[in-house]
Length: 314
Image (cartoon, rainbow, N blue to C red; front, side, top):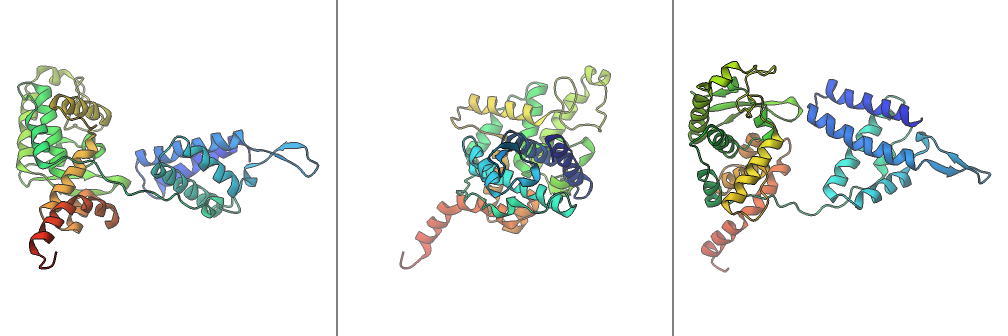
């Protein structure tokens, strides 16, 4: 199999992720990018010696465990272990697809061990820092009202920034205090939203609707976006990250704060206040409880304080 055919196989695999498994466009794009990197590496390293000692190009069918390990070694020069593990997982899934459809006889990626990963400690803000960040926003103008509504919503609900950008006005139930979120794998869930966030959204939308320019602007083809950029189109996740970075620096935070930190803060503060782990799992839209459990480490100070106060032989 040459490089062209291999790219065709990748295309077929990515298409199957969308059509058969219902993966989101973002997830399919991530798989495609990871596999494109593998294809590029393999096509540059398919030379070998035949039985007469002469150099000849190998086919993709001859790629084995050592080739996969060489690929991972290359990744180690530029990627973190978590990223490498993800790329290896994508490769295993790709090979499983090939073997299932008779395009490959073996799955060499299954014979390669996943790199051992260190414990991931998510970045989060304390309650005081979270309030300081939100209260620092200047709401005397439309952009400030929008930014306040965005970050109040992220902290109030714990949704991903990608989920927030897909919110339409119709997804917010102001009377019941709920929002309808489309998560990973196009799975829909209902999430509670607090009064502070709802009030911020209402103030922003009232100011926005009074803008004459909005009435002349073209409506977004995919609906009526909840949060708009200066051109009155759907705000992107990258733009939100830039806005948060600027606001954090203006607040004097020395660490980099990404929108995901607000999701981490939501989970941390909920668990610290005694929320049930499985309830937080549902709110975050995690498939596995172990994914949610990574937030429990931040409660160790509270646990130790309780232990010191309560245990008779501490």
